[in-house]
Image 1 (cartoon, rainbow, N blue to C red):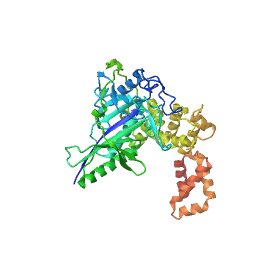
Image 2: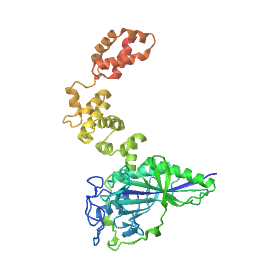
Image 3: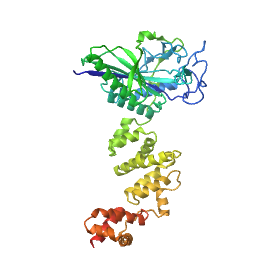
Length: 465
């Protein structure tokens, strides 16, 4: 029997602001000693009053523009009541009836709403037979996004989460590092025999990697399907994901909105949002970059690597601003993705920003005009970090400019042939592939400066004669 899986996602992302959501404490929960970035407000001491962070609100409104959401003209904060050790006030300041954003679309997935709230403290349960709580994270601005239940497979859910992370980083709203908990995904999953009806929804919480998102959804679809086939009933509940066993497990019965007893926070004023408050998008969005780079002839895989890299993408975007031909764009992306990445991996102290854009562009132009070959380009690339001179000046001083003049290379060819009579004999006996060895010897003799195509041509002509 055929079953239909229906998936909706809830994603929390910590926002990059100077201070916390409702107080002046530094927003830096991953640094500093535990419980040092706190104050009476975020610790909920009696008599304290919260003040909403304008920067956090504007970041959410900026996100709304990027996903074509409808911005509220009126909004307010609510109290979401529940007790847990990591909630200082025994309630969370969130939004219920009047979120900042409604609707919108991202990665072909329709959005329901986006609202703003405060993060909880961080509980740790791995120190012994007790738990400890760090309140540095309590009160950090947290954007929550809810999708429509329009996803039907794990891959689509994973792709959506990846695109959301990319957009958040592109806009500078959040670092969205899932390993640090800066972006956390919850999946609502149901399975039904009838494609027109939803099954019983199960929520899997706190998925902290794309692999976990996809794995938990696949497991739940299989678990619920098997349960239905065996005549059982799916229970509406909240489940966790076991990274080791690769299976979900029961945590608690799922609460409903009524259980949280939402009501407007009396300490925070109502908000009227006007057009003048809406920030402008000052960067190219991922899809805009995709179109731009496709028009430069880059393959899809290279485009995704570039736009997903916080290191490579700004550098390549600046190159594009200067102006690149299709050939230059292809070479530039290849050298960035392979060679520059390798250099930075081996030497983590180096910074791509120390390469002057005009120097890198000159290097690529020299490759196009065949003033240097790829071997020399790789050597020059290392020297461009913190360089005051351009690659052409460096190459000329070190005698690394490519030699394409046939008259200059004939003596090299003759020398290589004289030293390798056995290889010459093999070639004449029909083993033509050995000519690549001879070309390699010629490149070695010229310290990589010879044009390999010219060498090949000269070797073929000499061997024929």
